[in-house]
Amino acid sequence: MSAADTPNHFIRTMISKDVAAGKHDGRVVTRFPPEPNGYLHIGHAKSICLNFGMARDFGGVCHLRFDDTNPVKEDLAYVRAIQEDIHWLGFEWDALRHASDYFEVFYQCARRLISDGKAYVCDLNADQVREYRGTLTAPGQNSPWRERSVEENLDLFTRMRNGEFADGSRTLRAKIDMASPNINLRDPAIYRIRKIAHQNTGDAWPIYPMYDYAHCISDALEGITHSLCTLEFEDHRPLYDWYLNQLDLKANPQLADSLQGADMDIPISRPEQTEFARLNLDYTVMSKRKLVELVSKGLVEGWDDPRMPTLSALRRRGVTAAAIRLLCDRVGVTKQVTVIDYGVLEGCVREDLDQHAQRRMAVLDPLPLTIENLPEGYAATIEVANHPQQPEMGTRELSHGRQLYIERSDFEEEPPKGFKRLVPDGNVRLRHIGIVRCVGVDKDAEGKVIGLRATLYQPDEAPKVKGTIHWVCAEHGRQATVRLYDRLFNVPDPDAGPGSYIDHLNPDSREVIAAAWVEPAAAESEAETRYQFERIGYFVSDRREHRAEAPVFNRVVSLRDSWGKG
Image 1: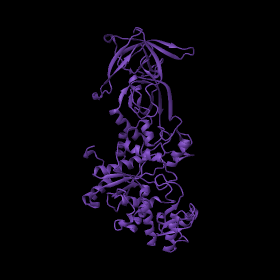
Image 2 (image 1 turned 180 degrees about the vertical axis):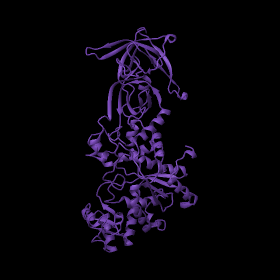
Image 3 (image 1 turned 90 degrees about the horizontal axis):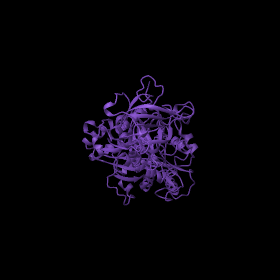
């Protein structure tokens, strides 16, 4: 992308000004910090493209940091999937880190807050904490344990660390302001007791830090200059700043002394958080809880079911990484919350595949057609272009005999007005072969058309025709399974009701055609190869199930928007 084509937005402008002013010594260090408790979805793609893109464009670096502070829901399988998705999108992190790398630092920082009278151990249970917190219109109440002495709090926190107390029996809380209009500042929890093994640290820690606390310290330790996150964290920014202001890690680097050999080659920073609107698409849900429910209830076939909004599912569907990056560019970066028409994503996919997908022929609903004036055993080989506008994509050989399959919808005994394809005693062009005339229609006992007979005109005798249809050779073609995927929900906002979002699942979101026919050059392709099946749509060979001897194709997107208005 040229400089002229680079999308401009308020974050790019902000970083440009910071670099020009020498802020952060001119450095740009960003991060993408997913929690490894599920698969990334298309909503995450915007944050990935923004954080990695800003670092790239300003000659900086971007870290991948796993926010692994809640081992109850985290799994190494998610860690691997997240890394694969980021690489697939076309990005590479400068450093791979984990919040758990800094557990000892978090602990020492918490002890500093206690020593400064800024944190205390609280014995309220979760229900009591909610009761004491107050509401949006009513202030909270101080915990009965808020005025414990520094000595008692240090002792209790040490014993929490040593595993002396039961899960949920105590928390360490920041001492801020229970009357603050921002509920996030009403003595938020810093640590909770969770006696559960961690994927990185094993059983070393019976206490785990909360996200708001760990996140800002991690940013500072990694030298992050611009902490870019979505708008739901806007109300958390005062807490982000409060922790960093109290700890002042740049002025107190001894708090990070426990990072022995952690390869921290970037100086501690005072990062600043900036929020942007997340990417929202209609006709889908992106709540992690709801995606888990779809999978666990068997309403989809897993996290990579091509109807899901996860990046692994979109990849299996055949959506390209380039199309997703293009979508993120077109959506832009603003603070205005909007819902993007699903058709915008499909348009980006079509735009990319129209340029880069080779053409092949396939027949989804085969109707046999015999060219009677070709002899038995006839065989011809035609050299055809792989892409009509991209000669650099080369050519392929396409063979045919006298027995072909055409689409059943390309023949009508009683054609509607304007029908330009094959009819009894009518003519049509068979792509790459020539013009044929339908001379016979074969039917079964119930009157269903089961075959057509035609004759092929000599080139100098062929009449002019308005219609062209595609075909697959019965002898050389391959039978294939084709899955036609569509939007998972049949309403733009599945959460709007009435009823549950599950009530709005689209019953026609998946159709399996077990006896389609494709030309050999499609069947013999590698998995995850995208094609335009001429006159039908864009398809991809399934990355998990496709084999040359048993081809499986997923529809990526139709040739045009079938959900358009009007």
